[in-house]
Length: 77
Image (cartoon, rainbow, N blue to C red):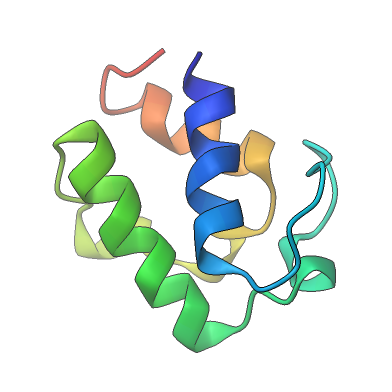
């Protein structure tokens, strides 16, 4: 369920609507630095959390799997 919500958040931020692969680098779907900020905000709103500054590294938001691992650290599974 978390993975599906993460994918929905990504799809709502990028122009290309498609099936997002969990290990694919999200830049191939058009995720750039500006869209990444939108995604961070949307994830925080969706999961009712606030990411710590040190968790906002690009690598944490490169793939669906990375995002899910990050969310797990916030108790979201």
